[in-house]
Picture 1 (tube, rainbow, N blue to C red):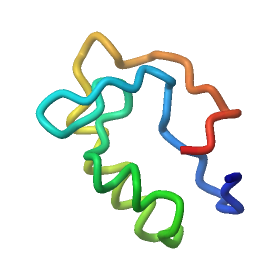
Picture 2: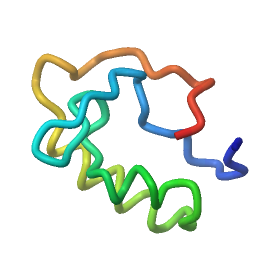
Picture 3: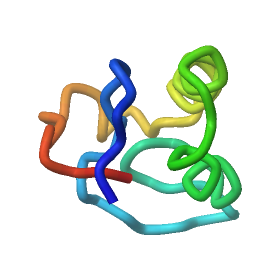
Picture 4: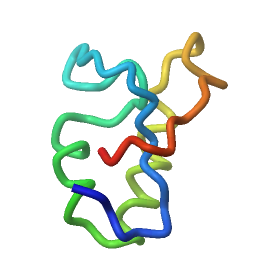
Length: 69
């Protein structure tokens, strides 16, 4: 499923869930599922929250724009 949102997915294809948060993008399991259906305002909120959870070693990893999640 391809999103029609102007906000690109934060997915970096390092999808490893640890303590209910993705090690790659920092989103929770619920936020990953919600991403497909939420509006741009909610996506922006998710980006802000998830960015605080990204481990230092993942900062600066190139985002794959083909990822839809």
